[in-house]
Image (cartoon, rainbow, N blue to C red; front, side):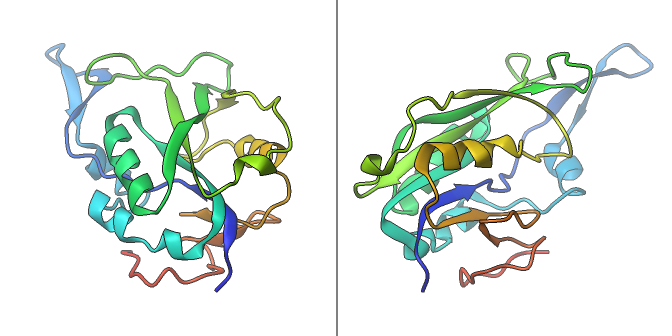
Length: 199
């Protein structure tokens, strides 16, 4: 089985609580929606246990780095997934500050505070630190928001700038990217993680 030194993942986290929208009903009260109802129309979400069960440790090299996207409300779950996949959390790799096409900061309702960014955690296994090619890769990325949950393409470029041309795979990929193997239910996968993808 092929082993990868760079693993880039954007798990389909499942939301269970209601979120307030910025829209009001005819009585002037804020409206709510259940993210799974809305998100499910875009792609199928999965439970944390399902995500943890993926055999990512089997496809990762003994010296590897993991970049995994999470939302602030899924932070603890993402750390659990990192452990289950055989990695150790190190830091936040990237913070995506979302922009509208106009350049205006994206800002939408959260349960506690207004939101407009996502985080990509960085975790490692073995001795991968010595493979770093550049110490000038910035954590903060400002990029336009596109399709629901679609991450900026520049992140993959920054990963390669940071780590170099190592064997790499994108998990939960939506499209094939040159130089990357992919796995997901929206692409022709290069590997089999021995699990059933729910469609």
